[in-house]
Image (cartoon, rainbow, N blue to C red; front, side):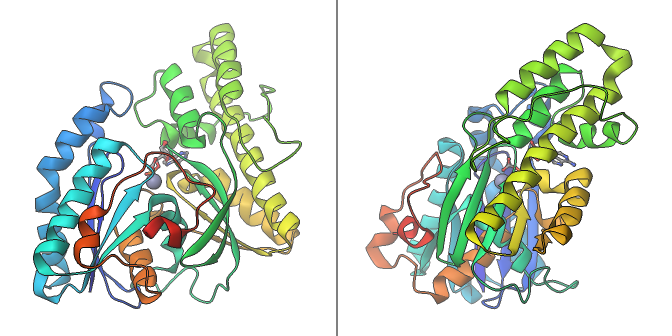
Length: 346
Ligand code: KG4
Ligand code: ZN
């Protein structure tokens, strides 16, 4: 059994997964109510709350899986990217457990874990059970917007990423502007269903070339539209913003498939819950002859099952820390486009 621990942002999570990737438990506690009143995650508050939540979450994950710590054969933990103080809580707990029990420690990259999520097996099977490597992966969340080429569980290369805001951050900032609760992505998704996506012509930043993303200009354009039209335009603006973000994500994901000649695409991360993104991606993939695997919604937002699942695959490939090396593991805050998973685990 692999115990996975995740604490990179505002979710404290633990999960137990078998070496084959079968999810035995998946416990997530969210700090959303704590941060909602500030309209975003307050890093120090998040770290302190991870300290409070982490032990009960791990105990619950073991209980629900029906296993004791003595049946755990390795600890997988998110070591980055994320908020340093938050990552340190999960990593220190993982190190302490691994050290005390003489277990291997598998540091896992959060973004790579997101795009591994469709390989997890549960009562509904696995979304990507027979998906072959290499595949293109789009990870879209509140903190990240990255396109990778994944060559093996332990090897992924970043092809493009956001130069400013993440896609989820763009959703959340526009939602905040319109007075919607935090995190706003899901509220924009709901509102957009009743709006006219063609009403506002918003920029599609960098959509013409390359595989990098930029969403800060879109946010400014949305602010100007909101200031000019206000409340009565709420649903139309939500629909127009959503369409602009989805347009760019779909265009770039399929461009990555075309340019690399890889007809397989995995989409993951909190924003992959967006209904319009799921619909547009599925349609565009069929037209482009690409097999698109969109992560089941239950594994899109931050969780530790994806960390334990990738941890199990990395462990099988020999990418674990043992003995004194466990104590040397460290966190990193930003994406490391030049490094593969295997290098990150060292
Ligand atoms: O992966 P995640 O749970 O945490 C991070 O690693 O950031 O992603 C959270 C992000 C938030 O920005 C949230 O607004 C967005 O995912 N999100 C959505 C939807 N559901 C969650 N964005 C658009 N449409 C949704 N339905
Ligand atoms: Zn995430």
